[in-house]
Length: 139
Image 1 (cartoon, rainbow, N blue to C red):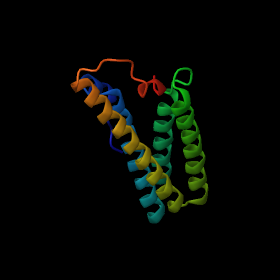
Image 2 (image 1 turned 90 degrees about the vertical axis):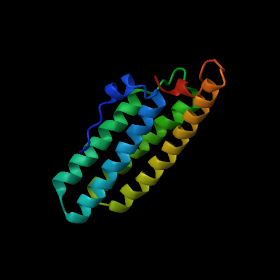
Image 3 (image 1 turned 135 degrees about the horizontal axis):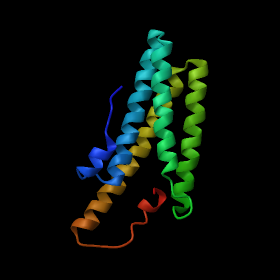
């Protein structure tokens, strides 16, 4: 499994949103590797990759600010709960199809985060300084 040191990346100037995007990319990679393990009949690798994906989802879920994050945080909470249940279902059924569907979903949400990051960077470069309502859904 590829290891990313998120503390080092944060120290190197990667934004909080950039770190979220990287977590999504790692989840998609884990799910893709699990699909390959299902095709290869490798139970150990499938399980390891799915466990890692679930761990990353738990980190994302724990970072949600449900008090101040409003509807975006609640929507992400529901998305993560659904993702967890679908991954467990895929593990039980040994279904690469379910995992491929989840990969598509995570890529879609990742794209939304990338758009938020672009908007934030544009505001920062234009000198606009205000509370970032997009970030309030993550701690």
